[in-house]
Amino acid sequence: MNARDDWSEDPQHRDLALPGEAERSLPVMLIRARDAVMSHFKPLFLANHISEQQWRVMRVLRDVDRLEAHEVAARAAVLSPSLSRIARTLEARGIIARTAGTADRRQLYLSMTPKGHELMALIVGETTAAYVAFVERFGRDRLYTLFEMLADLSKLSTKEKP
Image (cartoon, rainbow, N blue to C red; front, side, top):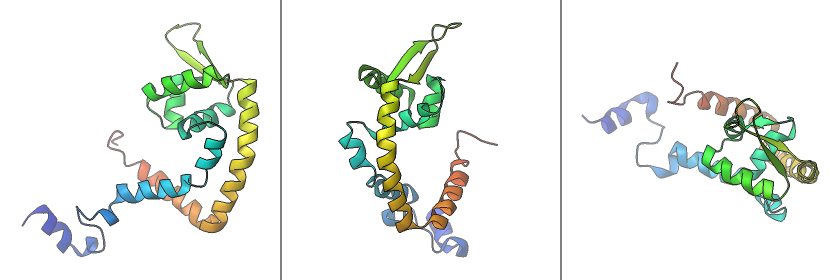
């Protein structure tokens, strides 16, 4: 008996997707769900000439004076090499500032500029309206349940073994 047979004959897993059944693949379903959620916000980003990743970085920086680049990358869920490119682009547009650490010049700190705060204020109003419309369609209780489930799922990362 192979692993697939074990999986399919176990009554606990009978309703779960078998390997190879793409329509019930958890990673594919998560990507589709992400795309559905982002479809509510992507037009707002495009209209303001920012990418989704740039938006995530800006959201992280909105409420802090400055933050070390590695921490920004972690909070915004972007890879460090991507953050370097994003930071250069946002700095060139005057949206964020990059400064070296005083004790360790290798450290890079990012902060929002006044122009960045102005752009955030403009976009936040638009994203809030889109978010409210999304919550009305999906349901507040379902959304909070989903938040909890996704937080639990995120804790299962193989990078963070107990």
